[in-house]
Image 1 (tube, rainbow, N blue to C red):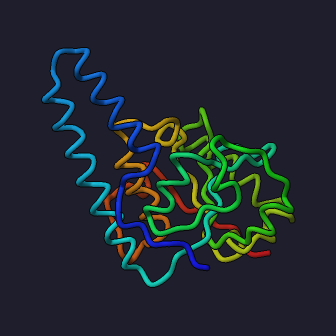
Image 2 (cartoon, rainbow, N blue to C red; image 1 turned 45 degrees about the vertical axis):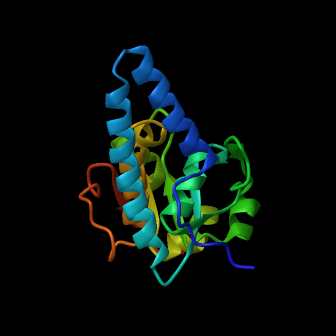
Length: 197
């Protein structure tokens, strides 16, 4: 059965984010600022989710936050992948990032591979990903062969916070470049040439 298309931003992790913003703004004595921030973020997220749901293809996405060993993102990042019109594989149902074997990635057959390494800025992550594409097992992955390996700034995906809207926009640009252009490419993420099998 195909996954349901997202029509709402009411995911568990995002609901927690709204609650955290409310708590923080209340504790600082500026509850109205928290409400304003939540409204702005929700508006941006909902706009991306609605447009992504109209895309003709729902792509299988492996979103990695570690490479040695490969570690699949989960939780809020998997929710953002879904909102951006993708299906996170493997590890989409896990609550926390989980280590993978190459066989897991091969079985998942992702059309898009995203690398956003914890603690690494974009240039450092690009260097790591370019080394990765020299290894035959990685080069054999469909996403790498077809030029759909993307690298993102790890700080953007470190934890859910006010940058969640930019993180979703970044994923949407990677998955559906013809439909989304927010200007994050080159600054928050870059495509890596896999160079073929």
